[in-house]
Length: 253
Ligand SMILES: [Zn+2]
Image (cartoon, rainbow, N blue to C red; front, side):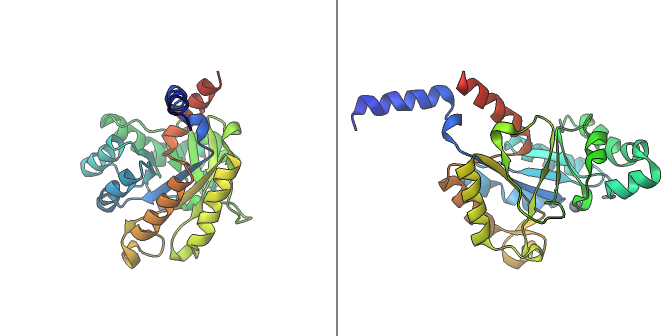
């Protein structure tokens, strides 16, 4: 191929941010709190130019706020996961929405504000959600992560139709969820082929069995990030989903 053509193609790619060249996206999300191990995984994400989303549970202590700031500074998304990990649906059925917001949402949000942490995402405790929950949370967050729902099938979200505020159902990764890496790689292939977003959730990140039954072994993460990168998927945090949409719109113009 002629050199001038390659230079031309490269300049077009530069001008459009290559957004249109990428065909899908994956969000790896991590719940609860494993701050020190999450920070240890930062170089691995960096190796693949990848970002993830970390949903923090419990009181936002000064130590947690420091970790959250470091995660954000590395380009990752930090979201919240409630103060006491109480299930949304049974709680609001019994005590009402206002009490859930007062006891589970506002204390975390206010602490984050105090530490200068902007938060736009939430993960439902125990993945239990419904539409009433989404409505209740929508004044506070853009994206709400839960599980795959009763059908238990991995969900795909066409990037072209992704609303600015929405619930995103994720598939669990860990031995407890009977993860099969070959299946996950096929799911990433499908996301790439269909221009869709696929979402995963896990908890801890550590080598081998040290990740725990509901955690992501570092080796798996390495393999999945490598596969996603090979497919040229966007590997992004929730906060970048709307930016992706903006880029796509401007690339089309
Ligand atoms: Zn949790």
